[in-house]
Length: 243
Length: 243
Image (cartoon, rainbow over all chains, first blue to last red; front, side, top):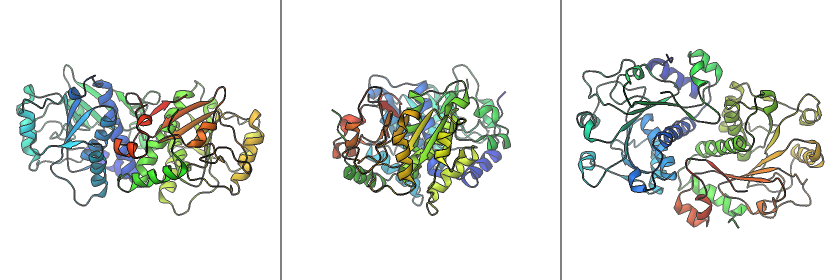
């Protein structure tokens, strides 16, 4: 049984990293996003045909979305074709604006109508990368994300596999799927820093679980009881497959 | 023949990345330092004995030094034992101060007397990582770096292999070794973004050349004539061995 980090502990660890730990959000997001990209590369390596490797990236309004923007940049450089759905852009946060500029410069496209995109005969993304909400998620889900998650939840059989970053969006960080939120069912979960308690409900045939975010020193690991987790990485790998 | 970037072009490309390219120095340094660490991991994978994997990291006062600080963090997490020689610390630059805090939190040690260290019977670093000067280097070399490079140059037979980041420190970026500077002779060179012209003088048996810094979009690559170079990377690798 792997030790998990509750929503409260994860938030405190994040604050510690950026205060006493002296990490900047730019650094942490770069390493987290790179880990997300590498986990996808390992599990779904690119095919010969670029068209087959289009990934629909659902970008939320906060740091989980930022991780998705960074991951999209690396994935594009590695031969994938990420397509962004990013309906609620921050107008104030310079980092997110800059990450988006980096993606535009790489020729990464953006869509406005996700429902049209996912029901079109012409667009068949290989994966949906769910970077909507992370460890600080609290319901209710605001528009338009409520409808997006409702759609993903009710059309799961017809849609490409979903890869969720940190938590499956709409799940309670600590308890898992909740009644009042659409219950999305990802194929793959990429936990960042350490799995959150809801990952214990992420079970079933064909489910794949990765861990990324290799930047925790032994003092912080001890303080948060995750010494064993941070020792799971091998060699110079930035991600490790947990199951 | 690989296209190189002159000191002038490299400086302009760096400015472009951080202005129109919308990259922050934190991001670029994280990716550059990670590439340096991965090149070392590929060429000198860790041994079973941690003691044998001590690396003396020579940290210069600018961005080349910053790349070395980031590389040291990753290398420590991967099982190496980096030891810093960082005699001219910036008191104003928050990023360098923060990177140093991150290293202290990992228990990375620092030495003051490099001559004593390198001549002691007890300290036998496996490698010397030269992160003193990068593409913006102009002679003369200020104290204490003049004496350090003089020592490395005149004791090269007795010292562990030197791995230089971006350029061999003390070399002219465009023309190579220069008369008025001590001529250090690295075993390995890790070029960042693209090789600099002086790398054409980096030749000989057993010399190893890597490229890192995979963050250039095709528009910038075309503008600087390095389209072929940025296509050398394979898969999700952040570095590529050039020779």
